[in-house]
Length: 476
Image: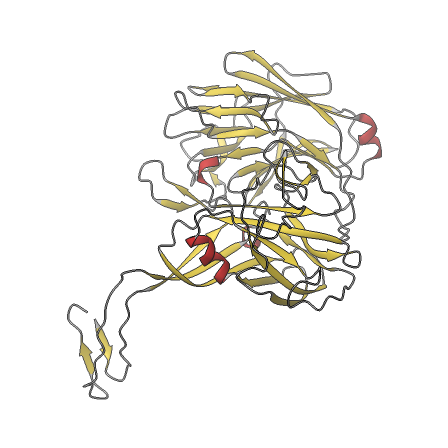
């Protein structure tokens, strides 16, 4: 290589590399080459793979097609290129009436990550791809004249199977023939109103809309999913109301997981929320904490710098400090947003329901977490919506990398009189931050790691350099 003679040559026994590790799926392994590629959730028009569909998301291990061209096509079609299996979803009807030929809502919007249909003047149907999930199917803008919706799901050359009874957070599994692990699955439906949509007070509790779901195996490979909403809850709801039977894609391909927990609602699982509060409120008597676990397999040397970047989705509050704590035990992300934890899901009380933390909120010193952490607190300051906060987790991530097990880390806000905190509480030393389920990709958590690759190259120091001339280091 050629170096200017005025450069200072030093010897190194390694190269510094930088990697970005994101929560959830921003990348996928190509089913042919195995190479990691970025997921493109911008629907393309008229791919030949789906001649009957307008919009498709093809830069993905699974091909996802939306918006039918012809009357006989499903609303969503998911194809596995590896096996050629297909899974499709139709809209059957509302209320007690179902259509034998399926309903064809009007396409009214093409989004950067999905498609919107108009059902009637009261409701919209949306499919939004968040990398690893397809979420928020039905949005009720006002009280509809019905309280039940029916979908049909079927497959060709694949498997659709009802989830086991002990997996209550999953209801329907899609598998390749001959394989036991699902490549995607339908989560248990949930529904909630907009009581807190414009209210930044973390004490605000959205009203959960009670519902019942029923799966009926109508024939081989064909199922109907009926969701019945409680009519009294719909009468008293703050609209819009969201009905969310999430589809979770490719469980074995995620780069990381995240969740939140709240001391005031000890049973709530918040693993599928778009954002959640971090810090303290109610004069230091109520707390919100965040859980993260990143895949560090791409890091092959000693970490010299690691920065976690979070994006605020509201606030305007003075977040004094945020401290990371290395976790010492496993925990479950969960699939709910403001719902009681079920089997394997985390909350303030549970690390993996029904297994509890040693102390609520992962508070157990040297049992749930290292206290204090390898890293001190990061000073934050006043945070407004859209602001990005960078938290130094260098020592924490290096300690995780060299530990026997990677359980991730916990973020704790300014509270509890911990080391380097002044012990004085103010109202709202908390802000909401985006999680991996946020619709805006740039808002999702990101961990940037610099590390020195072990082994590496060796460049000898040169002392007999003539200023102003270049030196060619052959084979350096």
